Amino acid sequence: MNVEVAPARLNEIAEKVWAMVLGLELLPSKCDPGRTDAFVLGRVTITGTWHGAVTLGCSPLVARHATAAMFGKRPNEAEPDEIRDALGELTNMVGGNFKTLLKGDCRLSVPKVIDTVPYADVVPAPVEHLWFECQGGVVILNVLAAGASP
Image 1 (cartoon, one colour):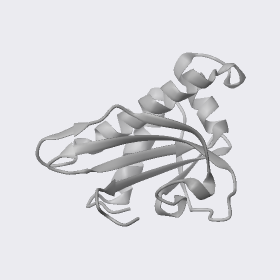
Image 2: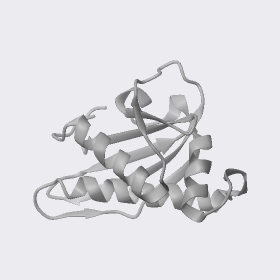
Image 3: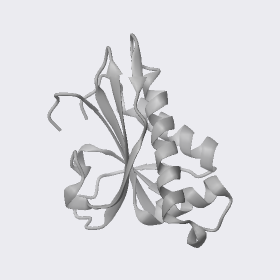
């Protein structure tokens, strides 16, 4: 994670978005490099005086719970399009809150969401992310400046 914002501040952003929008609690957790499951990933890029990206991902179980909370459904009723919409909106909110910490004029892209990315294919690698537990699953968050090595 290559950014001048303290990880505690990023934790706070993610926790507040999750609590305010979904009514769900995120609990900071340690990275589990032995995981083999997949993540649903959302990503926004930031351009302007600062260039980089914010990646937010979660296990499919958490994605279903988040979608259910956002759309007033049961987790098993969440449709794939709704899951993408919910994760895109959460990524947009976390990225937007992060953007307010940056100096100068910055713009946030439209979020892009990718369904079920295998653990080994997450870029940057999941070990570079902040980790959280939620609803029996995992949420990961990463902020990376353009041109920085993960």
